[in-house]
Structure formats: structure tokens, C-alpha cells
Length: 322
Image (cartoon, rainbow, N blue to C red; front, side, top):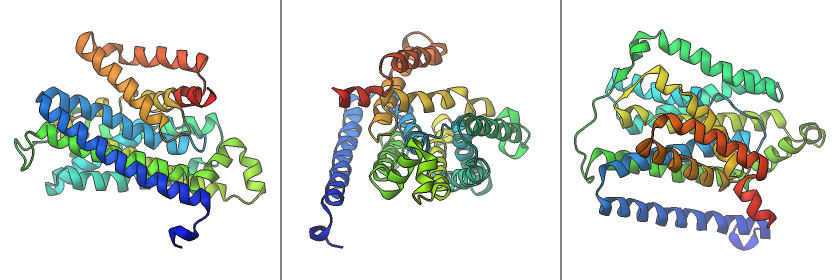
């Protein structure tokens, strides 16, 4: 179907997608150039931290925001991506890009399997099941010597890479591309049939089933896609830090932030998770540098309480209401 024959809403969506990709490309290039001009190595790693949370927030929003199924197992899916990278590095010496692809496949299959077993549950029962998944995965990793077990595993990062001033710049650019893709995928889901079906499930699942919406199939698709993107968020982590252990990979902060960021920015919208991730991650980085990293979850907790009490639909909901 040509652009001239598309219905008006579909045509607007197509133009909106094009505007997003062009705008995101321009912002990404400007950000990379600005940080290179600043020339501070810490800027690359702080930027990576923020962008990782952008990917994680956009991933959680696909199932939790659009479909209304709250996933407490974000750390488990991220760790699946991280340890897939470790396995590929240990077994074949593969770098970050193959690790990201492998992490997406592993976490996507994990999401599909988890969804098939748990998506028939509703409400808090589904959330508890995803939390248990993260605990089970952590137990398996702790007892798996090939990936370091409880000791953790190291990755030797290259000192320099062609075309990049430092390894920090390289890993930042990789995560910047992933963030643009993750947010773009979230936006495409929102304005697609999948997104409309997930929103119908969120509003009233029984009514959606009654009018013929294939609820289980859509939820499985959302769980698979959400899991794959969470794996993508975690896959570069060993290359970013040079070391990973179960305590860091399954950190409670990932599970808490993955829920808090979309809620603060505005769950169920493609832009809300981005706003929430940038706001929370920037505040946490500032607190880490100036005071202590121990304040990170304290900041998240207080912001979540304030926004739930005063702006229950998040920043995007507040702007739309005005």
C-alpha cells in the first residue's frame, strides 16, 4: 500500500515514525560530539549508565506499561543478557556486538518461556512469579563455575579501538545506538496493532477476550520482546565494567528502577520511560559522585512516593491533563 492510499491515522503514524528516527539520529550525533568535545572520560561512563536505564525502562514499558503486567524480574532478564555475553566471550572470544545479539536471543527465549508459564496468572501472582524467576536464575549462576560462580568473571577490554578516542567512547556509542533502537521499538509498538491490543488487555482483559482480541498471543509477544530488550540492556555490562558477579548482575536496583522510571515518566507512553530514566539515572549519578551510591534507592523511593501521590499518571500524564 502506497503512502497516498494509507488511512489518515496510519499516515500520521508513518510520518511520526520518520520524524522520530531523524530526530533521534540528530540528538544522538549531537550528544556524542558534545561529549567528545568535553573530553572527560567519566562523561562516557556516566552517559552509558543513563542510556542503559533508558533501554531498561523502554523494555519494561512494553509489558508493564502497555499491557499492565508488572514485571519484578527485570534483573533476571538483564543478567541473562550479561551472562550470555560472558559465555560467548569465554567460549569463543566474541566481543560486545555478538554478546548483545546473543543476549537478546537468550533473554527473548527466556521471556517467551516465562510468559507461557506465567501469563495465565493475573495481577500480583504474575509479579511474584517473575520475582521468583530472578531468584532461581541467580541461584543457578552462583553455582555455575564456567561463568565464575559467586566469584564473578573478568573480561579483558581492548585498550583502543579504531575510530574511537577511548574504549569508554566506544561502549557509550554502542549503548546510545541501543537506546535509540529500544525507544523506537517501543514507539512502533504503541502505534501498532500489537500496542492497541495490549492497551485493551490493560484496560479490561476479559472484555478484550470477549471481542476477539488474542490476549495470550499478544501477551507472549510482549513478554518476548520486553525480555529481549532487557537482555540487550544487560549484555554490554561485563564489557562496560570489565567484571561481573551475581550480586551486581542481579542487583535489586535494576528491578526497582525498571518499575519506577516508567511510572515517574508516564507508563504506557513511549516518551514517558525515557523522561523517567534520564531524570532518575542522572540524579543517581549525581548522588554517587557527590555523596554516596548508597543514596540511589533512597532517591528512587522518595521520588516514587511523591509521583504516585501527586502525579499518578507520571510526568506525561500531568502534561496531557494540562
